[in-house]
Length: 434
Image (cartoon, rainbow, N blue to C red; front, top):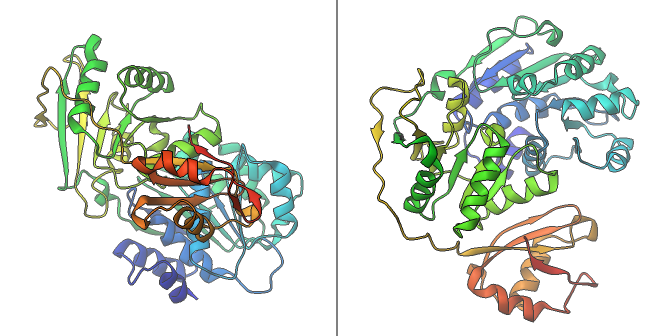
């Protein structure tokens, strides 16, 4: 079953961290897995979870608790891609409770969710916890930071049939709270790999406090059309930067905890498919999210802790790729965790505005519940829309909607040609995703 799952994922061999985690889990002991962002922790715990599942059990057998809805959806997607016969479902804040209750009425083998929503369903007896033998606490340190301690304590205290706990984190924790009830765990520690890698260049830009926004704009213009994350400490700063870039006509998107779930998912989607090359964000995007290889990290505001700095930089130079991290500093700022010998990046007074991305995201008001799949969309766009295969980019089909990246030069003619067409017998609703 494991070999078949890896084949479905087009993986021929596990990396050293994943292999160590799988072997540790085979002993039956609790496992603490510490490894950097982007190293493949999701697969490292999903394989042991899969190995523990039993056919014929009519109840939830494994529970995965995560700090964010985006991470829950990402893990669900990876498990579905493994092509097993086991059902998986997600529960998280912002998702319709009615839909989740209907899903839980036919219990999944694996339940993934945020602590608050899982605690709600547990409290309302929407699923039977007595079959749960495996518990995963993914990005556990982040869950504590987000204030989920009481919910997690309640959930774990209710799981009386647990046989194995797997706890993951990107950095080593000084102590694990007693409520986790972890017992003599096998520790798989790859945290030394989280330090700044040789493939990651560090650069700094010294700017007067009043001119930091201008320096950021010039830096982004210099970087050009390359995948770039700009990190801020506060969502208000994210919005302020967004206003400036909008005024200057520089395409981008924003991502922070104050946004509606729909808008957050759409921002990540457009960054994944290349419609926007710049994402302005808080530390919410520092780890655990399904976003593409990022070539540049910009710390508009440096985080307060070294761990947070490491997590941010972990979004680039991943898995042997190369990347550059920039810190925009005033002369008064001093962070002990920064090396003394960081190279200074020199900026010109102005740069040409980068051209718009080659891709535009189109929104379809149809999804899985309409029996729509990627093949249907490709067929419609190629046959009725007269597109070439190279004109189509990433396609993502959700429950009730779908998103398609299309070459910018083809969008206008495509919308005209597909106006009034049908898909699976329904009139096509197609527009540019705002």
